[in-house]
Length: 120
Length: 443
Image 1: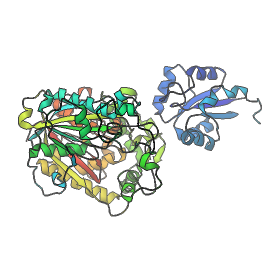
Image 2: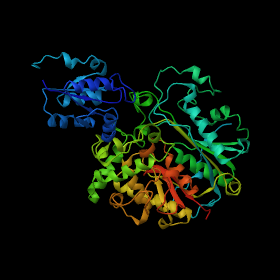
Image 3: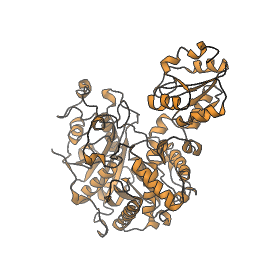
Image 4: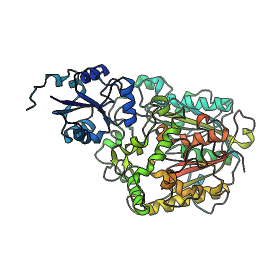
C-alpha cells in the first residue's frame, strides 16, 4: 500500500520552534520503509528544504500550509496523512485536502505501520 | 514624578509650519538594543523590563556619557499591540518582586512606566524630565527631539520595548472579551468585523493593484531585499535565531492571511527593547560617537471618512506627510540618500515611499521600482534596515539603521551605492505616524 505522510515542523518535529515530539530518526525510518515524506509548514519553502537537507532526508515535497491539495494531486498514494499540532492550520487544512490527520503524540507510535493493508 | 503624554503642541502635524525651529540642534549619540526572543520565557532575568534596562545601559555606554548627566527619559509605556495579559491569569509575584515595584504589578512585564525604569536604574540620578510618546519608537523619537530642542531636557534617553507572551497574538486580554469599545475596533490594524490586522492594508493594496495594473507578486524583490538586509542586522530576530533568506518562491507560495496580504506580509511579533540617547548638538560634539543630527520631525494624523481608509485617502495623506517632512527639514526629495519608512505590513511600504516621492516616483510607480536595483549596493537603496520584515516586529530597526548608516556603523549593511548623508524613518501607518529626518550635518 502506498502511503504519503506530510509533517508540520514547528510544534511537531524535534527541530521545530517550539520543538515537537517527533524525531528526525522517526522520519528517516518512515522514509526507509518506502513511505513518501515531506513537510507542510508556515516556514518558507526554502527553509523547509534546508531542514531536510541538514538532516540528510531526501524529502519528496516541501509546501506551504494551503498546498496539501497540490501534494495529493502530484503523488499517487493509497492513503495520505498529515501530522501537525494546530487545529486550524493542520487538522482543518488536512481534512479539507482529503488527508487523514494525526496529532504529534498520536504519530509517535507510527500508527500507519499498523494500518490494514486494505484501507477499505 | 508624574509622567504625562506629550502635549499636542509638541507635534508638527500640518503643512506651512516652515523649517523646524530646532533643525540641526538635536543629535542622536547612542544606540542600545536588548537581545531578541520570540516570547517571554517567564523568568525574571528576561522580562521586558530587564530588556529595557539592558538597552538603555547599552545606549548610555555607546554614547560614552555619565548616567548622572542624563536628565530626560521618553518612552512608550505600551509594550504590545497584541500580547495582552490574559484576564484572570496569575501574575508571577516572584518576578515582580525581583525588581523595585510600582503600584502596577504588570509594570516591567506587560507594560512599562518611567517610574519603573527610574526605580530600577539607580544610576539615573538626575532625570528630571519624563514624558510618554505613545504607540511606537517613531512617536517617542519626535517627542524626545522636540523636548531636547525646547530645552526641557538636554540629554535624553528614548526607549521602546516590546513584550510577547505564550499563545497567539491578539487572542487574549481585550481581544478575548465579548465587547470592545468602538475606538479600539477601528484603530489601526483592527476592523469592526474581527478580520486580521492586515485586512485594511490588504484592501488598499488591492485597490492599488487594480488602479495601476500591478500584482502582489511584484512585491517579491522588495521582500527578498528586506530579509537580506535584515540578515545583516545582527541585532535583529531573524539574524539571531533563524538566519534564512526569504526567496521569491517562498514569498509567492505563502498562504493568504487577508488576500492579497500573505503570511510574510505580516511581521513576526518578538520581544526586544531599543534605546537611543539624544542630546543637544553642542553637547554631542564631545561625545563618543559621530552625532546624527535631526533636521525635522513631522506627524501624520490623517482621518478616514469611513470605517477603513481608501486608497485615495492613503495617497493624499502620505503625499502630505512627504511635503511636511521636506518642508520642516528645508530639503527636497532629491536630498534623500535613503529611506527607512515603516513596513509592519509590507503592503503599505510603497505608500510611504510614493508619498516621499523617493527618487522622483509618483503614485503607482513603487512596485515597478522594486524590480530595479533597490539594494544597499545600488543607487536607490530601499529600506536598508530591512525593517520589521527583515528583523521582526520592533518598529525601530528603521531608526537604528538611519543612525548607523550615517555614523558609518551599519557593518555589512552599509549603503555603498550612495553616500548616506540624509535619511528618513518613521511610521507606522500611512494614515497616522511620526517621521524623523536624520543627517550627517546639522544643516
